[in-house]
Length: 162
Image (cartoon, rainbow, N blue to C red; front, side, top):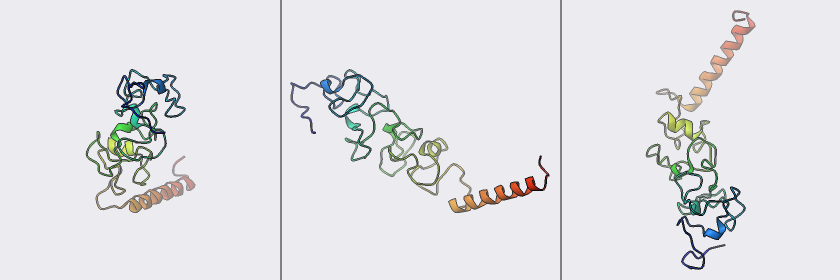
């Protein structure tokens, strides 16, 4: 349902995009007509996004409809605030990661977006991850890990390590 925010009968005191009567301050999102958000705080969950752009649909449409949850600062649980996950696919810095606020691992490389950003890596590039070894592809890293695991198990079988 589209709300007409220009109608003065439906004030939006905190100018967050949700009319005050929809912001019930219960802490429970029911719908865009009962958001559970705070009518005097434009960013109830402190994730750097105005409550009104967080529609809780689970689908990123645009910066004006992120589909994120207005009461959960990190909708996907990847360690990044929803507001820094701009869904552009372009990593600028830790405040504009370009990653998807609905995917824990935007590039599918097995590392959470938050882990990658904390390590100074690009969460949108599957070849950029925290265990980056120059010249070694992600598959190469997996193969190295498997070799190490097999070697360790072999040593355990021979009783060298108790």
